[in-house]
Length: 124
Image (cartoon, rainbow, N blue to C red):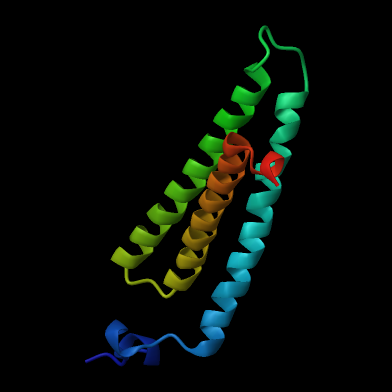
């Protein structure tokens, strides 16, 4: 019988995620979220540039592009997580960081548009 490497001898269920790996996932999620939020808020420039046939066209363009961005990012995060989980990959923690950043981005969008819709600043 051929000798296998040390990693191949371990069963995936026997391996646990250490504190340093969890910290690395949190840092990675922070970096991914920073880039994700930058793109999200840069999409405002899309609505300000150009003239549109009716008054709310720029706002609708920004809303649609933000919705596509956030939905696509979430879908990519969950796809990546399910794909790596099915393969029992060692990179599941990174996929979880991407999916977590997408979930936080969805909360930012919900809060941003709830604030505009409810006009919470005017009531204070």
